[in-house]
Length: 117
View 1 (tube, rainbow, N blue to C red):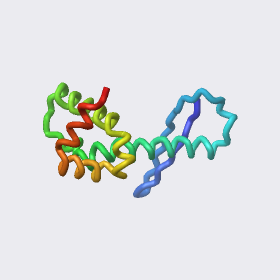
View 2 (view 1 turned 120 degrees about the vertical axis):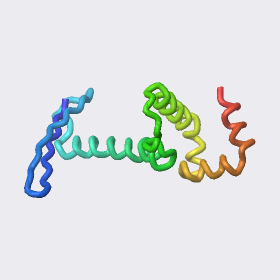
View 3 (view 1 turned 60 degrees about the vertical axis):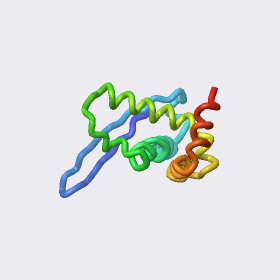
View 4 (view 1 turned 60 degrees about the horizontal axis):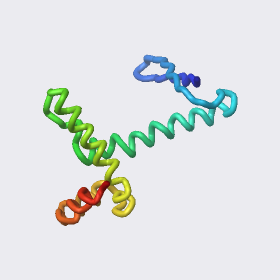
């Protein structure tokens, strides 16, 4: 287990927080700076690869429904779609570019979905 201590200073207030991360590696295998880099890199990747795509491109946070079943189902569909189109995102370069291509070529988009096994 690796513990990351964080201090935040804002408007004369100081808050402290400790977060814990599990790893199969022993803590002393890496220096503290390397662990910190891994933690930051992981969460930065989550933000770019997942949250940004869901929120900025597909406006997930603007879902108006308060029905937990509907919100959960839509989230699962978004996750499945991101998994299905992972290879296509490499070709098109970004989710917005892929979305524009799908809008311009509905038959091609349908073929992509139907040719998955």
